[in-house]
Length: 320
Length: 316
Image 1: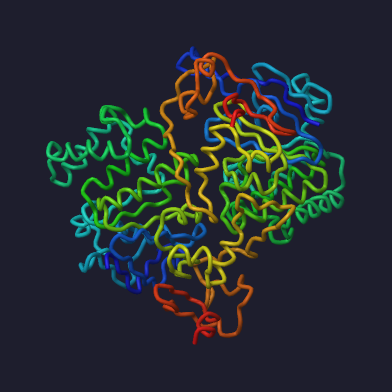
Image 2: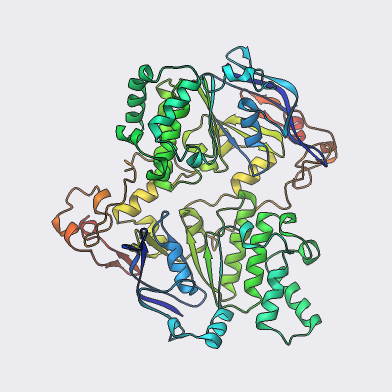
């Protein structure tokens, strides 16, 4: 087991009270697994990513634990996380395109980053060149400023930077969403390549675009309003999802070959609930077509088949 | 209804405007009444530039846009106003289309001041209500609210409702879906399809191939400002001929198929190639020749309602 989170709860502190952005999150990732994390905006995807690596106010740790390779991560303590950050857990943040210092040449910036982690730049240089080669970037990029690169090139440069110290877990937060389809494909395939070459052990790939996850992820975790809805292998999530939310979400995606005049798709009625005061019980029940009286209680996130976790009373009853 | 005749747009860039950047080159197509045309291309292909030229937000460098028989560049003050009564645009980011200080319905008030100053309050309210209902919003829930109190999908539909107040005939929809969540996307898309059945023509600008296929009957694939392939949507999608279209089709992440083994060439820095084929330096067709580099291939008709700008694809 590479990553294991147990009952993780992280809230946002605001003047109007706590926003329950991450509520009772329990899941694990196997060695070598690429886990996709999908859900609508505001469902807590990025909060989950940030709380594993850099939990700062207004985020507030409530309880739960995160274990990486059998070692507990002190996520509640920003300073002691420093020993893990970048070396064990690394992240490619959202808007990675703007993550590089515009006033430094890329090589210089990389050097400063390594020095701050007390690692020799000279010794790492050979490896850095090899990695640049792997993502098809030329070596002279190190003498350039970030402004001279295109979006796809910056994204690949950040990928190299984030993985330079062979972290055990890499979190990629919406890294393909600002790219063109052809560049998107190339970057996504590089992620898989990094895993195959064992540069990183496991990955969490966050995106709202499920069709990308279908191409590269081994398993998909679907979140809804700060809670886990379903986790299973990619094939199962796409072709035979169980949670009503996942089912509606998958069926609302337009595919090439589907025309309005032939098959009208439907969206999901209603809006995601506000997390100041989330609805009691199942958070999807107001929009759910199959909700019934038991949904007032909170459904547990349980394993129905091997490797297939669902939080839905309907499915619990059917499989009981 | 709307006809683009060899329009081009050249931007001047550089510190003193010394360098020229051709954003759109000799693009011609037409859009009939009640027709939805998708304009598909990667970033920097000039798709938004075309939309802005139709809306007269930027000037045209050469060529003509003809709306119902009249060249739109001749419109001045009053005629321009009546043009805007018929042609409107909705843009990508619904959050930045509003002024956060004012309530969201201010966009309706502005329309009233500009176009319907004599209309009675009662009549106006009814008009607003009916156009809000047409886009699937409940007037009681959305009126009198600030932009931050509404969701992205609601704001986007609000903007479409604003356009509908004017009895428009033509809508430029520039990436209006891409900022929305999957669950609300389809609602906005279905709304467009419904408006189309009422006779509205739509230019649907997108980079997402599956969305283009879902609602349009005609597709235009742009690459670096030039049309590389255009025609009936089904023909362009199922029988793609241009190497660029083929590469694009293979790179789209799909839910029904895993990625095909098509080599994706990463975009290098754009090389100025103003005379030859726009796709020349990325093209992988084995028999590309000096002719490709020397002169721009014209659009050739391959079958009824299907045109390709590549002579080598024809041989297959």
